[in-house]
Length: 283
Image (cartoon, rainbow, N blue to C red; front, side, top):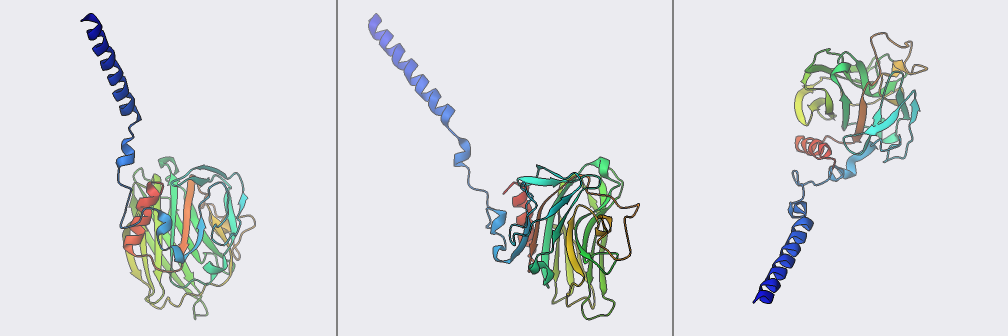
């Protein structure tokens, strides 16, 4: 009888050990449904055929679509990004790149970028992405924060210049928009519909402005020289703009920049929201 009890005890111990091993090996995530946002599981699935430039800053400064390589000035480096690595800026630091041909010939377009800064940078005035115009002080495109200096808000501004059919050209000034919670990773996306002269600005995937600029179209960028990441074109050495050098009120990217994407069409609001949501999850 004693032997029988011992046998049952051994069997129970072995069964418990086996069950414990199974539980430890069980991976609950393997049973979770894949992330799906509006039919997309990866940001790369959104408007794939229309992506004409993409700077992921995953250890290099190259546009992965055209192969155009950027050049760093100052103490740039790579840190943790919203998706992989990101470009880390600093005083006197920026990146220059020849403008890919597909960007030079854009009409309708969308551009999206992520930027990271902290509350200690709240007074900084810097261009996230700029397409320099050799003939003017302001660029063909400027997307920048204008130093709100507040703990919970900042001021977002966007400038687009079009030579078009006018001798003097047309400026579109979009902003200034007071944006909430600008510290940490935030996304800014701009779409432009050349058939309607219409601009839509998105902040973290939500539309904050829908503006039609009468007489702006058709888009025709001239004086296109280089793209600048991390500061204004007049803050580079030498300056990329006509008749202007560094300005005392302007600064350099104090934090990080990531996932700059340019498309040759207008992304829909659903596409923008999906892109931002997926990238925020590292997809």
